[in-house]
Length: 253
Image (cartoon, rainbow, N blue to C red; front, side):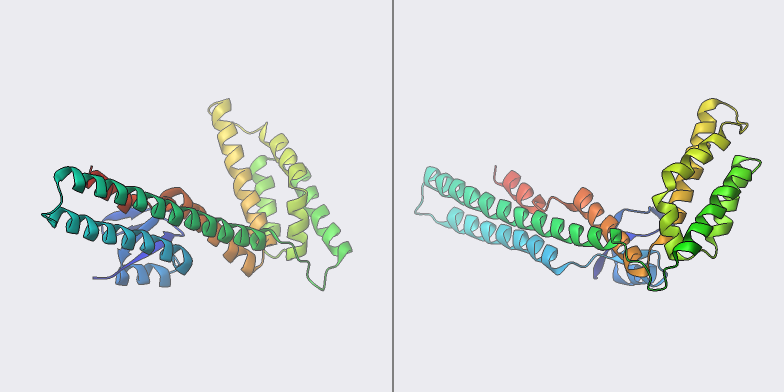
């Protein structure tokens, strides 16, 4: 039975289990392939990172073979065996720490490359400054004239439906001002409590920001943004590759 590591792009309930956005799972290949084909997951496949993980496993296996040979050597005293095994442990620790450093370095290089692509700004050749100013001006006017916070949010979403990327980029650059305008509208919104109002307003503003950010990015940037988040998940949940070493050391403690 073969498995694939996948990064979830959206939360799903699959075969009685819940898989959450932003987390990593090891799934049977046919299950993983199905989720990937549906656009719900992305395969984690970084040969450089995998090689460091495999190097740790290999080093641990070689250590265990050598320890077994020492324990089977009837010519050695118990003290002699313990001394040799201690030396092997120190040697293994040094090797594994080296692989961990290489893994962390390569992971950081991958993250920085993805981040650079995700945050790069390239204007289209057809950039029209007057049209961009006009579009952004219309959005601000719609917010200003909206009779409620909800209407202001809806007006932005309506503008984003057919907005050009250059205009979306300009909106993104001016989002601090847009945020203030929306917050001002939100002060008049009715809610159960001030805290409930704040949560609702902040959530809607965050969603609007993400929608503008999405409209301002090209396909390469969107893919790089997903990759960056995936690499962050690897760092958070699988950034320490010394697990096999920790287990074998406990075994021969």
